[in-house]
Image (cartoon, rainbow over all chains, first blue to last red; front, side):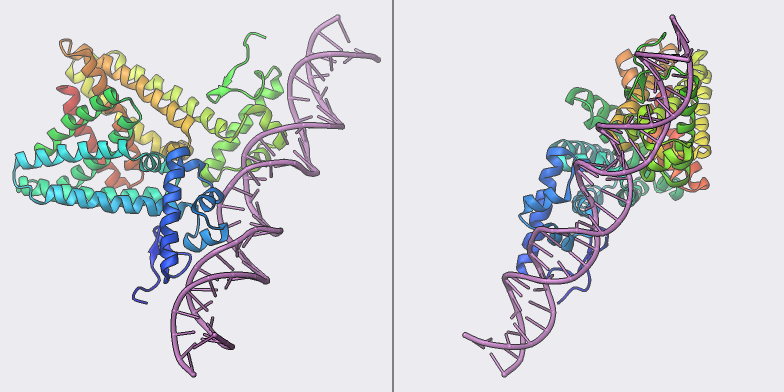
Length: 210
Length: 210
DNA sequence: CTCAAATATGAGACTCCCTCACATTACTGC
DNA sequence: GCAGTAATGTGAGGGAGTCTCATATTTGAG
């Protein structure tokens, strides 16, 4: 087998990486079932028995794939984060001047907001994140990673600014962006938009003149 | 009895308001016990049986005072919020100019941060808030109330600005302030301070020129 | 002192998470 | 094909908590 014990859901998996085709399919079935159930009833109402039933497997089998309930949620969050990180990386990669930075940043915020509105399961996990310490840490690491990318772009645009200050600013801006998104998606479209726009204005100032 | 069925913890209480002295004392004993347990082990580890034991009453009795576990936590949050609201009101009441607004706002942020650091139980409840939908709504209402007070002060200083825009800004600023505090208290003193200061700088711009 | 209303009690019903001893299926070398 | 072994699957049930309810005790008014 090519891969050793593999990480699943942020902590060591309940068992070695699935070797057989059947297993890999089941893993996807589990994650799909969980996504649907979370979208329907919220992650706090997620029952392991229901995930197993919907995925068409037994409880015992479910626990072969995930050591506990929060590992399922974490796995979903990680997949989502990986995708997001790619978008951020891509958007900020070519930034060289103020205009580029502005466009990239505003575009990312809009993208985030739209994605959140479109993916109910992720929205739910993200809103209820604070319930699970592992998930909070995961998301904090994610904020840090995204903040670092933003800081890099900002530093490129402001070569003479203090790197440490830029780093703190970028991390904070990103983290507050997430908070603003959470706030926006809990409002109706119109108010949500207004909040997103207010947040853009507010943080853009800081990005352009840190 | 002067008061009808009374609200406790945000939803209708398990029973009518306590009539006898004994009851009122027990209620305080329960809340004290809960506060201590949360400070010691976190609100997610709070056990009803332990609250009852520590308060020196039976489980059944505990459920006469609170319909469920989250009602205890909500009651603590509400008491805390009421106190905070008073501070905000007081700090912003006399604001008439830019200097006054600046001083009041910066002072409030520092106060919030210090209080959070000083009160472990509240810090825990506040950090884990997203776990409980009732608590999220409660805190959102609180943000709105505080945002409204801030908006009023801002409007006084900027009489010609669009009231709706001011309102959105103030609400967002306050909400992000809470997010920044949560972030800061999850870091060590030095980094926490740096984040608080960065946040002050960033939001102050918006407050002074909305 | 009596009686009703208020309050207290804790065994246990219930709901979930997760484990484990055992059953089944897939793969390997013959 | 066919053992034999590794991988995977199963679901009854152990355990931890939350909350209920039938019953007991305390309080206060008349």
